[in-house]
Image (cartoon, rainbow, N blue to C red; front, top):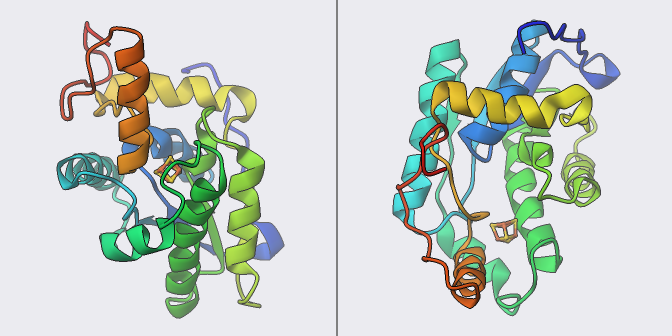
Length: 218
Ligand code: SF4
């Protein structure tokens, strides 16, 4: 990573302030460092009522706060309104990952991000969600654009964070910072499905709070 020269990034449409939705420290580490390197003013917005159980939610959030403080970046700790998330997920309990439940989940998180941005004078929103190779980037970008669309003063920045080795640097930074290593996407249904898959392979089920990047057992 040391010999990688970061490109100078610019917000779209001449926007000057970015509200970056963050899903977790591992995904936002590389995104944050890329943004910092370009001198873009930004704030982290942590709104992830999908994460279950609360123990997992708090670990992921605390990791993100730790990294934001290290970089001196403002951190907005938004609601953990799980009732709303479960209400919107009703009937989608058995949908596969990357399906309609995930579209709902991205929509919900982006909608709140866009509303907060609009109310607090941010001109652009983006998210760390798209850096993960497990996710469908087009699905995420569609949700981001949809959320920003009602606000004429707001633009969704669909920068491809995976570009030029971004996904590899995400892992490097996670190891360097010894971030908590989550083992499922986040919601109770992804936890259930990951454990069902593990059981079918004779593997142990997920133990929350167990692994950190750089651990021997990783
Ligand atoms: S699998 Fe992940 S993106 Fe999909 S609904 Fe669950 S937490 Fe949200």
